Image 1 (cartoon, rainbow, N blue to C red):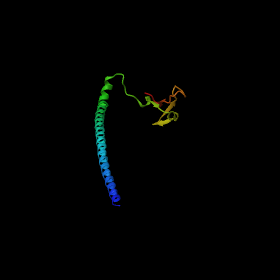
Image 2 (cartoon, one colour):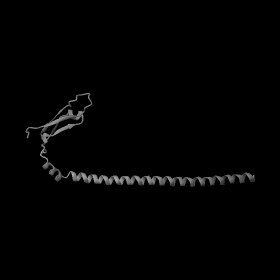
Image 3 (cartoon, rainbow, N blue to C red):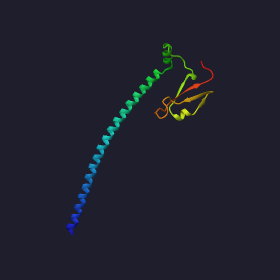
Length: 136
């Protein structure tokens, strides 16, 4: 009887030690995974910050290039550039549904004509010319 009771106590102690050892190794493994993920997140944050800075530089470049004063100066230098009029605008629709419905805007009507490629050729675009009473 005493041997069985001592044997049971030994088994309980060994099980407790095994549980403590497994918990220790589990904690070490979790710490290792956390450190790996932390380094990966840091790397991604640095990449994101670099891309944000590059995006800011691109936006600044675009705003400089699209400044009205710059465009006006370029237009004055090029003799082929001239001011356009709204009635001379060519509107291109990208879907057949938009091309088949007539639109009215500002007193002028837009007439739609199907693309020259015809049905079944994969071309879905159509072009329409805005028409109005007086041309310049």
